[in-house]
Structures are given as C-alpha cells and as structure tokens.
Image: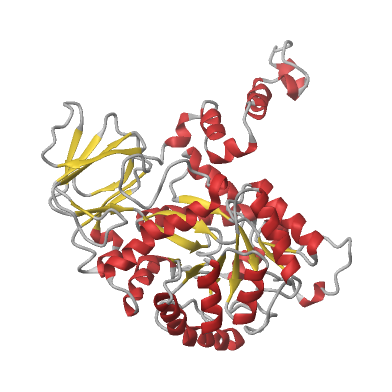
Length: 482
C-alpha cells in the first residue's frame, strides 16, 4: 500500500480484512441473532451497540422518567365514547397504567396537563403503500432504488406526523425502511410488511412492457420484480416459491393479486387471477409460518376462488355481490376496504384506468352496506398510490366513512379493529405488544387531539392544526402542549 508507506506507516496492514473498519463490519455481521429477532427488534437492539449515536439525531430522546397524561378525555380504541376522570401513565415505550385521576402519582413522574383534550391511540392505516404512495408511477419505474428509499423515508416521517403510528404495507420493498425506522435511523410508523405482491402473468402486479413478452425461462427479472415491488409467479411451484421468499425476507402477511385492478395496464377489472390450487399453495406457506394471505380482489369470482383457496382477508371487495358477502360471513373472512368514491381524494387516473376507477366507485356503497348488514369483520385503509399530492389526505380519507358509519365506529375501526387484523399475523407480528388501544402493556403510541373527534371527526383531517401531541414508542415527536 504505497500511500501508507509514503507517510511512514509501514505497519499498516496490506489487506482490507485487517483494518478496523472491516473488523467493525465483521462484528456486526457476526452478531448472534436470528433472522426474525433481527427483523422484530432483538437483533436491531444488538446492532444499535455498533451504530453511531449520530444516527439517532432525528429521533426524539426517550423521556428520562415516566410521563402522566392528566386532565384528559380518553378514547381507548375499544369503547365508542370518551371517558373522563382518567390519567394515562407511560413508562419507557409502553403504557404502564390507566388509572383514576384521583390516584396518587410517584414523585418522579413527569406530568403533562392536556387541558381537557382527547387522548386516543395512534391511527392505523391497514392498506398503505410505504414505497409507492408519494411518487408517480413513471418515477417509480425509472428512478434509482436509492432515490425511492429516500423519498419513502421522507413520506414515512410525514405519515407519522399525520397521526398514523402504524401502517400495514400492502406491496412494495419496505423491509429496509422498516428496519431503519425500528433502529431509530429515521422517523416513521410501525410497518407490517407484505413484501412483493405475488401476481400471475398479465395480473395486477405485472408491470412489464409489451416488448418483454414473450419471456424466456432464463430472462432477467423485470424492473418491478428486481426491486421487490411485485413477484410474477405462474403455477403452484412458482407461487409456493415466491410466497416462501417473502416470508424469508420478513413478511408479516402475504399479498396476492386475485383479480383485475384499476392502475394495472393489462387486466380488465372483471378478470379473475390465479386458480384455487395456486391460492392454496400460498395459503399453506403462510399457515406454515403462522400467518395468512390477503388478496387484491373486487369481483365475486375473484373473491370466492381466493376464499376456497384458503385466503383469510379480502382487500377492496367493492364489486362483491350478496352471495359473496355471505360466504365471507360464513367463513369468517376479513374485509379490508376503502372509501373508493369519485371525489377530490381519488387517485388520479386517465383513459381506461379512469373507467375502471368509476366502476369500482359505483360499487363502494354496496360493499359497505353488505359489510354493515352482515357484520363482516371490516378493516380500513387508504390505498393511496402513485399520488404525491394525495398523501396529505390520509386522515381526510378516514373521515369520508361518515357516509356509512358514526364517528365513534370509524375511530374504533382505525384503531382497535385495525389492530385485530394486524394480530392475524400471529408469531410473524413484528412488534411484541398491542397497538391501537390505550391499555396497560400496550405500546405508547398515542395522540392528543385538540377537541372531541367523536363529535367532529374532521379534526383528524387537519393533523397539523388539531393534533397537539404525537407519541410513538414512548417518544414525543410533536408537542404543542408544552
């Protein structure tokens, strides 16, 4: 190494493997952790010992002592009313007590007087696209993955500051960003990742260009497949392989495309995708890992085939009929749906996609009416996609559910009920405590709302003005109370 010798450092090793930097890297890679423990938090905690403290600069410091939120009106994510006369105590990253406001506090507890405002759980978006919400499709198809990750990280911080402390990611390469958030490298919500959406050729997840068809057996992966956005698989062996790959990467649940989509270019909205045996292959792989399969599906045929194949959750479902809805009721299937209306919050579409979008919007009333009349297990999410101007409407989209539900029911759906669907991931759940509720031992993910959201749910639509405090994992990311 001539440069070192010129400066008189003859003892400098001649191989990178003997350098301090390499030794540091090797220590990280040799750290004793299981793959799941790393993704779930234990391995992350171990790596933090090696991570420079400067990486934590954008993350609020953990409070030095327990915090007592006093003078609150409590919405706990379960009861459809506010409770008075309560104090919520946070110790570390969890809620340690919900007690009477008359009960004494330990002398070292920090008090935060909330001035009669509403304390509630952080919101949960159960159909979010962490990597694809804030960039146009053309950019995602062409940009470097590094740029996409940086854009997604910036949007993750904005997501958290809108009051969404948890998201269920329903397609995209969000594993790296999830890890960075969990390690404290960048602010953002908790992420339940699905990984790549598994799709048949010509399906909702096939974004190849026509010149790439026909594909040969040894053809390179498409741009979307290589980036982890989608995973094209045809036939039982390929579906089984792709399902196992996403589980290996850390998927908390799997997502398959069961039918036509609005934004996908090759599949009419009425087509069904995948056969019952193909669904069964993915469902078996998920069940072997203690989790479940959710599917993108709108139509009766797509939904029914998926259910017969062992799928446990239907995403969307706007074009279902009564027979399909009753099948979901009988099989205890979740409906994770969205208020897809033709309004100012719609994802922008043109041409044929716009016609498909209008068809879906026309079926939204029926889907919600079936869900209500049959008491289907119903979760909520936004499904904002390729829409950088639309992500700011995340909370506003929740408020449009007043077309079908009372505000208390909406807020329960976006907190406690959404958390029940997250819990379907069983042992693949990436976080070890409850979310979506205010109760002892739940994660300290909470909001202080300046007003009563049960009386005026539109408060949620303007988080900058109406969220006085945002806490995630016991750390305060926003505080206008002090």
